[in-house]
Length: 166
Image (tube, rainbow, N blue to C red; front, side, top):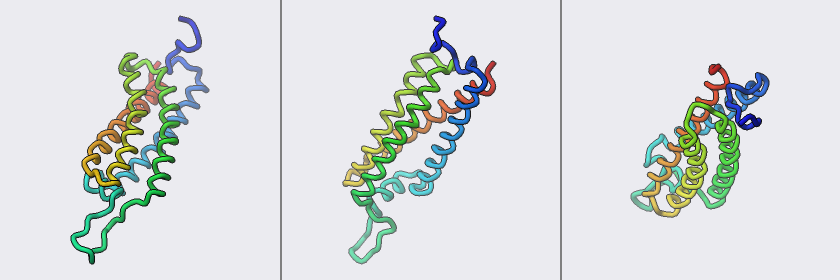
């Protein structure tokens, strides 16, 4: 197999490796900022996640909630922007990760495909929580965790292979 698609990342020409390194570093910064935003708005808890989308519970009609439920227009904007942008993030990362030599083909396939499932599960779950199904907060958190784990596995292995592997 001596075609141009049989090369591994560490075998790419230096300038291509530099471009790919920069892409992955920039994507990692952007995704990390998104994770910090999630931590700030939800406190990485089921209660915080539920409140962020469905609003705070009030005990009586005179209480003012800490957080109001997200209006449909904001849910539409959030899901639209995130589904589109995260899809492109994982197209880029998966395409680069495809050339990694660190994992078996089966593991690579799982790591490449899983985030696409998590994107739909996470943002579908947000709608369910917003409309009165609070138990789906666990699905949101699990799929979000899996998506971030896959991203950082891809990023770490790509950066290692581009910078250190000979």
